[in-house]
Structure formats: structure tokens, C-alpha cells
Image (cartoon, rainbow, N blue to C red; front, side, top):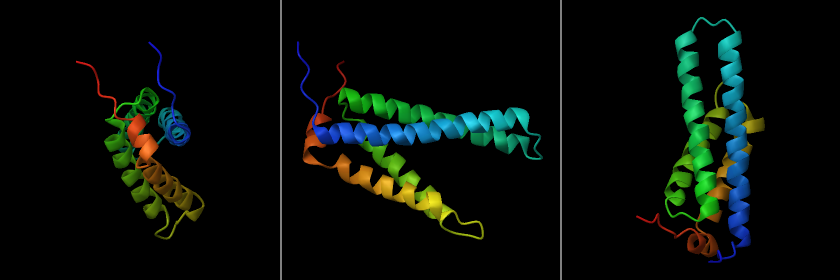
Amino acid sequence: MSTPRRPALLWVLIAMLTVEFLGVGSLAVTLVVETLTTPSATFGAGIALTIVVIVAAVWLAAIVVGTYRGRAWIRAAAIVWQVLQVAVGVGALQGQVAQPGWGWPLIVLAAFVFLVLFAKSVVTATTRRESA
């Protein structure tokens, strides 16, 4: 049985989601190292943040694999991630320690992924349901 050819925009989506995964994954590794090596007055908060980021990295990894396999569920999961990413990006643009250097790229990447998710070729390529 041959697998259908993946459209170019699906490969673009896979690449962008992989970039997001690598970013969150590297943040997770950094947080694990900092939690284990740097003394902190808020150790519990550091552990909680580290766990949340690890869960996010695993979630993004699952989305990347699901996208490669053409699963339908990835669209909803990727949309949720993009909304969260925009929220983080907007938060990075505000306050006394605003970081527009990484806030804007997060927002732009999320907007681009959101648009690609609704391209006809991507929707068609990601309609495969899990077999029971």
C-alpha cells in the first residue's frame, strides 16, 4: 500500500511546528538544568514551571508526529498551541521588562502557522482519522 504524497504546505507546517517544538524543548532542558543547579527562593514554582514546559514540549512533539501522519486531531491541538503562543508573545511585549525581540517572532510564527493550518491542501492532507 503506497502512502499519498504530502503537499508542500504540509511540509511547511511540519517544519514550523518542529521549530516551535525545538524552542520549547530547549527551554525545557534549560529549566531542568537551572532547577537542579541554581538555588532559588521559589523552588516549588520553578519545578511547576519546568513540568508545564516539559508537558508542552511533549504535546508539541505529538502534534508534529500527528501532522506527519496526517491526523485530523492535530488541527485543534495546533490551534490551541498557537493561541497560547500568541498570549506569551503579547505578554513579552508588555511591562517594564518587555522583550519585543522574541515577542514579535512568537506572534508572527503563530499567525503564519494558523493560516497554513487552514490551507485547503493541509486540511485535505490532515483528514485521516485514527483506525479503531
